Length: 208
Image (cartoon, rainbow, N blue to C red):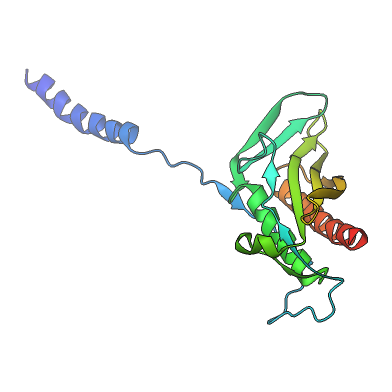
């Protein structure tokens, strides 16, 4: 009996320690949040477009997205596959449409294409309205996961609010090579965003 008691005395602390290890919270890998920025935007304090290309006001509607790109998840797919996957520990800090909308607005206003940008409260004073739609935004990899490209497709429409008619439409469809993985994907999307913003500015100049 004494031997049994001694064994139990030794065994109890071992079980206690093992139990603590099993029941203790598991440390999970933190999720990395990324943003989209147009680093070509040149901002100055008190920017005033003295001689804008067009004296009218433009209202830039918040960008809309087609599913599943209306979420803050980061998507990728493999060549010749219909399956879309998400990076498990990487995501946009907010839905990418919000990030891209604010960068596009800054690019338009600092490029002095129009006299100014109308807010939603001053929409009645705007002459034009710009609508944008995020269609595709993902990283595309080859079947060996050795090479990848960032893919971005965005549709745009310019509306004349006086006549309520579409002046012109545009599809931005571009790719750029990237490193495989979320870091390369983020750099690629930022590069494509800068290209998209500049193309929209040039397009707006041509249409107005």
